[in-house]
Image (cartoon, rainbow, N blue to C red; front, side, top):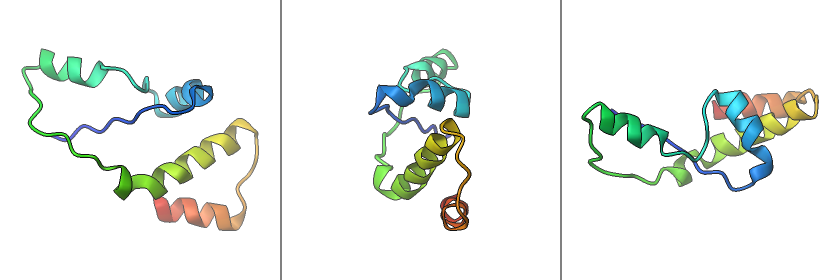
Length: 83
């Protein structure tokens, strides 16, 4: 089983992130739930370099949604590519 979590850098985006993904960013929620289900942590892999483009586009989309902005064709194409 793989579980991915990310950490909040700019607190201004916490509420928007939580609403968009239906989670609470930066909590111990995943580890606590896993331990309660008798799962244990075997390894931790840093995936940031491999998913940087995806997250940059996700945050850009979240910002655009928060501002009520519609994506340009180029921005929409980049988002689609990132997904």
